[in-house]
View 1 (cartoon, rainbow, N blue to C red):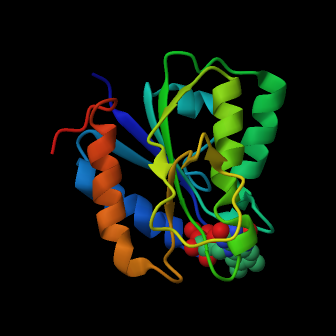
View 2 (cartoon, rainbow, N blue to C red; view 1 turned 30 degrees about the horizontal axis):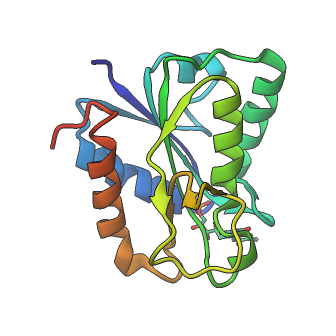
Length: 175
Ligand SMILES: Cc1cc2nc3c(=O)[nH]c(=O)nc-3n(C[C@H](O)[C@H](O)[C@H](O)COP(=O)(O)O)c2cc1C
């Protein structure tokens, strides 16, 4: 099985820390960590991998973190083929301060990568999350892993652990 590419965009460093934590859990030998700000030129960087973990925080009112905006816009023009790629999404938000748009970026990423043929896995039940509204729910579940370092950082480690466990079926994750 091929390597996993973990690409993340982070404005104040929260997603970056979470991405590092996830890479550490999976193992550096099988998971490359790539910052959208520093290690991304174009969509071919993503297409290098058959397995992708995509990290993106939510800004504005349910919008993408800045480093993902242009790449996703470019994809709409280039229409890359993600069929055969397996993708799982994660990202932090703020369920109290921004509870009306909780982790909206995940839904935007989901719609885009799915439209270009990717298999998206790693959905998460909404149980245990307190929020008002989210555009990142499909069929009653979050399309990826929501994290909240503002209000619920005590739940982060367990949430990541459970999520990675659920990904083992689809990703070359061993431990
Ligand atoms: C101006 C502003 C807007 C935000 N908008 C949202 C939002 O719409 N939904 C949400 O869940 N979180 C929102 N957040 C919370 C951030 O997503 C959260 O602080 C996250 O941890 C930032 O991660 P980063 O440092 O990796 O970018 C917002 C935060 C700020 C400061």
